[in-house]
Image 1: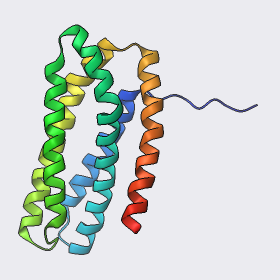
Image 2: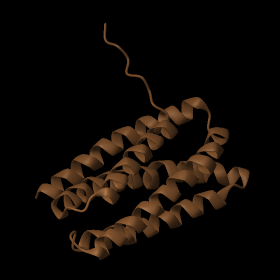
Image 3: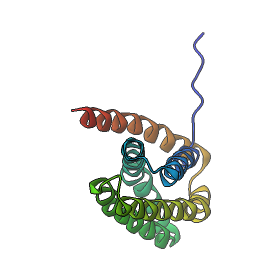
Length: 162
């Protein structure tokens, strides 16, 4: 008899991503060797882009629809703006010389921005989401996000190796 895969809810999935990216950013912050910085930033880029895509394509639109009914849209708009800033600083960091001080400064700004963003999401948006969505809705979103995340990671890894 086949065992049914345990469903992960959307919030748990996003928190797992946050934890992984925070750890990678912390390692990058401590690393001075250019080849290691380059490799770490590549991993971070894949994780951030995959995470941002599932939030922007699935979680945020669902949250926005529910938040409109309850007048809690400010959290949604703030999260969107923070994503926009990450989409600016990540390519700038990637374009920097990994052996240089500019790279280190940009990597620190990227880390600070993402740590702040994740903290706010976890304290505010996810708390609101638990009130706006029932358990089954969060599991359904989690399933969609998990599938989409796998697709995006495959796409990003494929384009990185081309």
